Image (cartoon, rainbow, N blue to C red; front, side):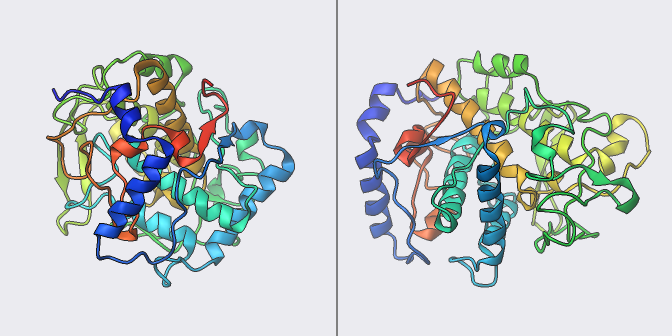
Length: 375
């Protein structure tokens, strides 16, 4: 096993000013120009990401309005996409067979931290008062919770309309989906949800399971994939892969599929709970079909804005783990490219924003904390 970076070593490398210098210096070494300026970390401002249940009505509206505005704003990186759809595109492409930048490996957490940070920057270009909130799914576990009301994320899908979402600011007719997985033959241009239906994810992860994850002392273990022992790998326990063999690449090379026979847990379980079992029904031991594939189950899952609240909570749990065990990451070498301690992570390297897992271990260096963080 590679030796994890110690708290002292990391502090010596990545003070806020040092992170800014590293980003700038690495960008200067690359001939690829940035398509648009990217806000630099380490400005001194520290924002607090709040539990979404504590947002005021005005804060909820500011957040959802900013998301809707990003859907209408051209992407600064690709004029053929909206600024919002740019993030859907990146997440979908991160599952490519020759990429696998964001999942099934140690960079799962630092990659999504950088991704969420960049999304938050885009939201704040629309409205500087907005900060990304998180959904604590260990507490707010019901389909009638604050999260799914008309003034926030909207509710469950309508069974009389193939489980299309008809409520809230992202309802059918108001929120159009334009990017789909390559294997999606139905391509519904609206959100599909069927919460908690089926046997794969009938409920959400519990506080006890989060505590079990936080008690794991090692960040990750070989082979540094979805096959890593989840009881020895905090990353894989939290990501949620169980009893997996080597992943399987699609015939066209567009998608790397996990090959797992175990339960769907933690982060993965939340995606499936929101989506509903639907086309996964046969895995539960029966052939009944509940409906179409839900939006949150696709690789293009950021099409559902609740994705960002879910992943903010995953990121918050990672911060809690580091408060107990130190800002450590492994491996230094030996994992697939993009997942080692000092590897540059895609797609940020293509933006001139060269960040590595080592640079993502302290959220304060990137200008934010959570309302549950230790001071």
